[in-house]
Length: 105
Image (cartoon, rainbow, N blue to C red; front, side, top):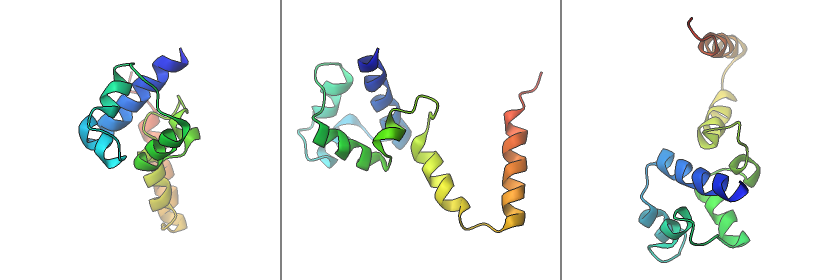
């Protein structure tokens, strides 16, 4: 179960970033098929490479394993951007989020 989540999460995050497995492998300093081998369930990264993977996605290891957060990179980006808003703007953002959470019947 853990393994399956790991493989699916890696693929999902890579697709969200819109990069190929080859591009990501090379960016991590690995051979061009490294990420592909992980996603195809042939190997696991070392802990050190796992930390590099998290750094590549600009997320923490905790965010990587947070099943309730489907897009941790985007949530982090929103969190950083929201720090620059004033109180009225924050109230507007909260209202928009609450409105988006209500699903139409």
